[in-house]
Length: 505
Image 1: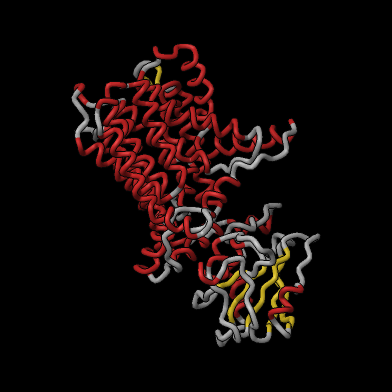
Image 2: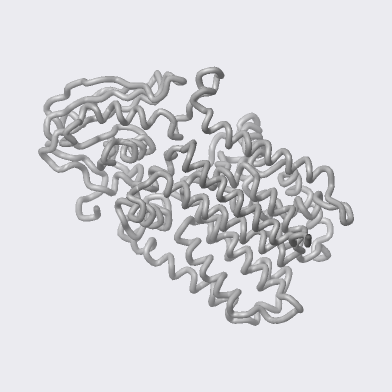
């Protein structure tokens, strides 16, 4: 019997893993809707050209999935699973084009099976879309920079690049980094491409997709730009804080991607600094799209926290470098690579088993349900909804926007949930949406995030309501003491405070 080619083997693995993940979500329902995921889902119920913290791509996708599936949780998880499968496929195709089928098979397999991809396939946020478009752009760029037989890159490659960039810009601001990376790659690998007008036209044309969110931002004081800038606010500059931030990013990256991939970052940068233009162009390509921007993320820990999902777009390029340095000794696969594969599969298996077993683990171990995940919210939502059996009360939350989003998704009938703003500045997307109609009685939910926090009816609330009836107090989850939620029934709303002028909502 003829042995299957590495490409066919990988495609069978990809299909099998994707089907397994779909069945995992369908039969076990192990991963409820996460805080950010529920937040993006609620955006999808309020279609707009732009949103507080992101371009509109994630909201538009959630709106489409919700419309087709009637807001099915499985449909949301299935969409993220298919997006993750697509991103793994384009990464494999990139490796195959630049190197070989065998190299693409072994490196692509770890990428497919690592814990980071398992999580991306389980949570439908902007990152799931970004990785698909990022890896499609990586594939198109590789075909442009390394054409077969030295021929000129064809129009199809530039069109794929345009498509990936345009859709990626709508998904997440991070996609903009592809443009300077492409120009750097051309300058260092194939400078003759600067004579091709498509090299300029395609990136510029892709920016047309940003017209809707830019128009929305112009109407709303450039709030997305302002919010994005806050991600780079400096924090405490002490040695212990720096070590803690650096260590957190290092350990989480090693878990999500494998330790060998993280080890490839300093090795590849050292190689580049030592040999400069003598570095193999194929290696340099993945340094530019992997190790270099990943190293910038580590440098950022000198001044601020870096969320572990921020460098997710660089995982593929960094893992390719690990394959170059560590995967093969001659024609043989190294022991280190086999061990890394076992580690990746083992950690992913822990995720696959751990999520369905989470409630049991919370009871028998010191582990606690995380506030910004989903544990506890379905039960809490049902308890609060029991005080509104007729559904004639508006739901108002004084608390984190993740909690409000979870209530909106998990309460029966998926009601509109409004977030009370005690300040005079915009805090999140909920501030852009109108409050309940004046004259509507409400259920008021006040979140107490920590023991030291005050969770009481405020003076501003007393200006909007005449009466408050305390109904109950609930905890989020039995594994943790806080947050806690106090529930009140109020008299009809007299006025709704908002930092957004009515004409702009």
